[in-house]
Image 1 (spheres, rainbow, N blue to C red):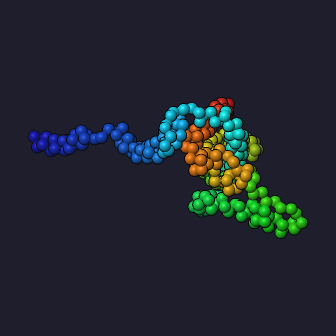
Image 2: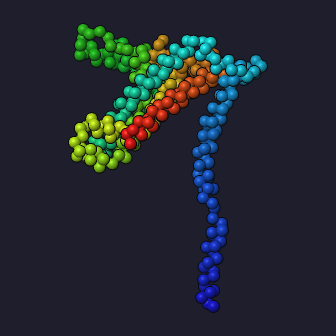
Image 3: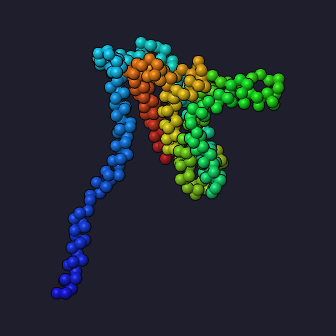
Length: 305
């Protein structure tokens, strides 16, 4: 009897605790709710609002009666010059992404395979350093470097006094250079995360089987780092297509891209429906491009496996 009296009080609190235990889905929902709530307020609601605007005949803040129409989505047909601008924007995006992929992959490879300890930490800080300065300041600093008579031109003339100017400000290469400077850290970090997880035993096995360095690079490292390259390409290509600061400052008259056109529709012409329609049209093109490339990448990954 005394033994039962001791056991029963010890069992009752645990039973009460089990009865008041929250279900696992509630804890998961509570942790995810702030993030998804913020995404809903800051991303999805503005996107839905712009989607509704794109079907309006005029800006809703004006006095014109609002009528829903599809005419703004026909802009690429009724205004053919937009097709050329969109193509130029895609070409700039492809070149920027390609250069970032090449430079970023080899920089990440050097970080993951050739540095350790404080040296790696210091280089990672230097890679993140551009994010510590204002983007407008970074772009304007390139005008001082690339203009005729600028820093690059002065250095060139110091080496070859009789040579001509090599300043290429207000050209498309200048736009690409400014964009690569701005978005290269994304590619380096995503490739670094993918490369640092590769087991050294895989590389050592390839070396023991007689594989040369370019074989290890193309048949081992690149396929295994492909998720990082793909993520970096998305993080680079998508914002580059809509960028307007670098093309406007570094491109001058040749810096007319879809980003600058859309910005003008919102800030100069106050034609928000057309700007929204152009934005969603470019978004559809970008999604179609990535859907095509993702299929190719999946087939290549299957072939490698």
